[in-house]
Length: 501
Image 1 (cartoon, one colour):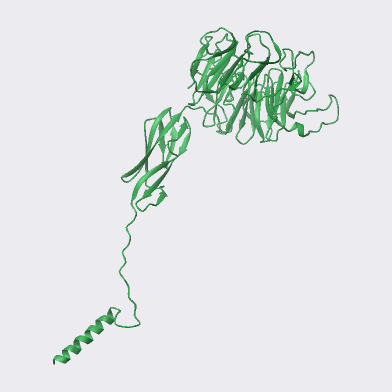
Image 2: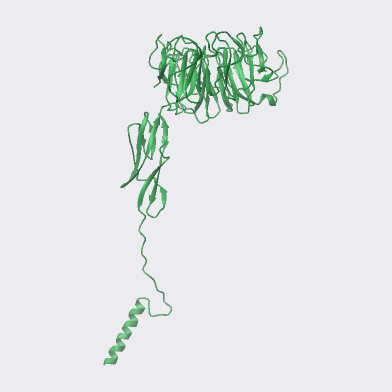
């Protein structure tokens, strides 16, 4: 009985093992596995770190999470974004927009974990990375480019020079009809405006009686009008009634009034569309078309004045042409007949070279590659800055400083910024265009205030503007037509730099 029970127990044990997958040499065994714990979010980092944006522009922030297992990944869902400080606004997905100047703290939160970064909001004006003029100060109007790439104008508008679709004067910045945010550079003539877009196209609006807009007509334009279809433009300059521009292939073009040969095509005939400026133009009256050579494809800069033009080639050599009644061509003498094609400027039989130029009404300012400032042309108000009045027919050095950074020649006054960020002015000051608190002319450069954060200057006929590194734009001078954009139109000029809205 006892043996039977033992055998029965053994059989039961074998059966149990078999049922569990054991007891057979052909079976398999398995171990119990433990599912690893999900990594836990430890921290959130925002990028870019401590960014700076101008008022009116937006920036996409990215949140990256770091987990307990050391891994990282972009966080795209479940985040709560916020901003503290009142100078910016947040949108879904981490898009932040500058509202007013100041500093904010931007935070992204997921559950109980959050990450923050400081945000600085600068003023609404900034020079594009590719360069360009953000202010066009004309005869009595102003057009400005904001950091978001849009344009606004103020001042006289009787010819449509503000581009807002009307002929109504404005006393505050008013947006142009074309709300594109692609504008990169501006230039203003007496009563018209030119502008470049980021795609390389050129546009114009305002007075067009001499074809200075360049759209093959002499009809004024109240809104931005594209000039041709080419998208290779890199430099533009508007004179009193003629225009010049440089293309990316190094060619130089001109159009508009040509009574004094300022278009450089060996004629005195106005042109309503851009024509190429050639070093060896066709003889006047010839039926043979001149052929462009390599020398015609190395232009770097060009500036249009009242009735003359200055060009600079890639080797820094300077050429001038057009009217010369006040010595504005810098050739050493006035001539009875205009020069209607480019002539190289030389001083003491040596090529005169320029790093940058600014062409005013009848005077020219040039910064040489060594940082020295030269000037020539009309000087009845001391606009050359050489300590005396009287026209200069050859380039004359302005003091002995070698740290000039940027210059701008206006109607009868001049503005400049030095490398150290100081602001200077000289010449006519009857409307306070020098910004020194008086209406007395100055025959020498005088420093404007004590600030050392100026980065650019823009001179109009009798009004002035300057840009600071914090993105603020400041204006002073004549305001009878509202060209200061401060909400007023008065005979009383603005005597010191005053911030624009």
